[in-house]
Image 1 (cartoon, rainbow, N blue to C red):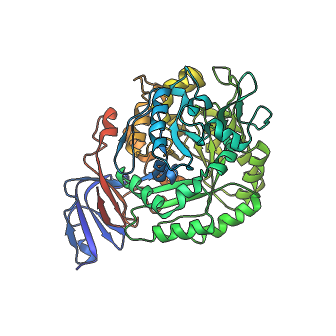
Image 2 (spheres, rainbow, N blue to C red):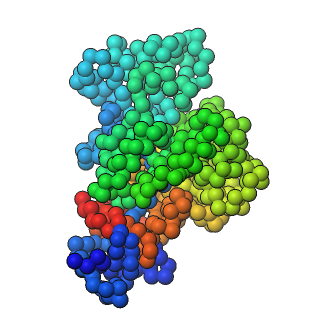
Length: 541
């Protein structure tokens, strides 16, 4: 049999300006040999023609540049969110629209648990139920003997019951930032950011590393990605212990594993030791596991009121958010990693956090010139034109959280930052106009992974109520498709290998039921994903 396979498709959207469309793509040894018509590879020798995909539309495999590997295994916990969600097995979980509904679902789950097992929930978001705040009193209705913790959808907050508060020693005398108290000085059960959450997580066995790094979790992540056409995905903020690395190398080396994974090492501890660890990890990279980048976590969540925002602050008068990494630590870490030649992905939700990070990166670049760094501001939800222009001057890329426009846009107008700033949230138009490398993302499991939905959000900027949030920030379908292919690949420094269908690149494709470039902008999210191709191996759903 010939070692060249020519795949036929109804149409191939290449994202290559030199040949925007085609009907055939030739693959040899997992790479693209030729693109064009049925005879495109004839000059290279004997070929095998494959019509398996002849009824489909091919695009470059989608690149999810900001997600977390626990997107699959998080379903081990009870889903308590407001929105309908589909789990990795395809099961629909109805959203919960009241605190009573949340309590009822938790009661159902609690009745099925062994006696000593904590009850853990995830996906809850109080911003959709603003009339009453979830507290320990609600969770005590589920159990007064079993510890309960509910992780909010942003993963920056949680709420626990009285048993869990007692286990952590949280009471009226506790002086820990992020332990929320009522007017009488009693903990309400709400805990904000890691300093307050970690003692509970440790005692209840909530281990995000375990959710991400066991073999079943990695394989589940591959299935989540394949269902939405993703062939390259990140795991931003990974502990990457030696045991984790061994597992990931083993799973990703399996020829049946359908995904390239790009973990970013969590920025904790001494910055110089962190840099050395990142450089050592990079030497262990393989075709399907790319190592060496680092993720910094600076502020929190806008909808949780823990993001660091500039004046005039939050519309409801809430205090400014919390730093997960103090500004002086941000400066120190950026300086050490930049000097060591380590690419950084940096979480910034609020515009104050963005400003501090841009300042820190500029200082690092002045001290240690390195023009090819391609550091990435992740989320960048409140960045304005001036900040985008500074990023362009410094060579900084952005990956914007477009899904927020639909999931939280109405709430941001009414409850967090007001209409003026919400109109420029996730300002993809401004970022593109500034000349930046731009990607857009889901932050799964915060919102569901689905690049075509993310693209739809950036194109239409429609909220759940149907309003358009920021007409001037809309982008075209073509620009949105760039942001989930080549743009995202550039943020990962992988655009020489993936992101377009052109000669020499890896044969990674998204298999679609129709052509997204011909879809009406408001129908982009409805284009069917039929499967993926990785290294020339077809994996249909």
